[in-house]
Length: 108
Image (cartoon, rainbow, N blue to C red; front, top):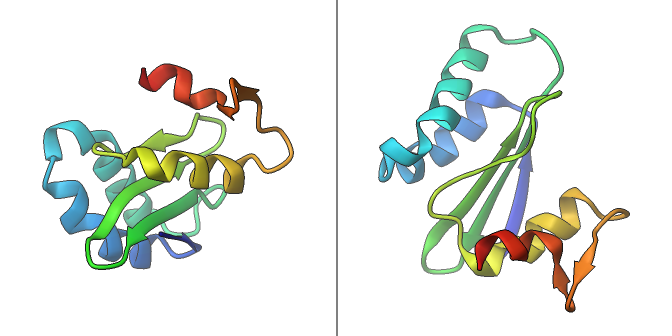
């Protein structure tokens, strides 16, 4: 499993669009933010954009954050990708709950 960070909204949109559109009803907010950011390139802070891919399966998770708003996760978001995104996104502040990242609490 590999996490890739993006600095270009256009490149991230191209890499995630097919994955996000498979479940468009769940990912409409992510798709809308990407569409808006593509129109307003250079406006505001660069968002945090990450894609998790699994060999042979392609994308299994996408994450996007546009400050000051919280991190948005795609649906589906592979359980196996949660720890990877959490440790890369919050490397110094990762709270552990029962040996797992605190974000697992919301998944159970």
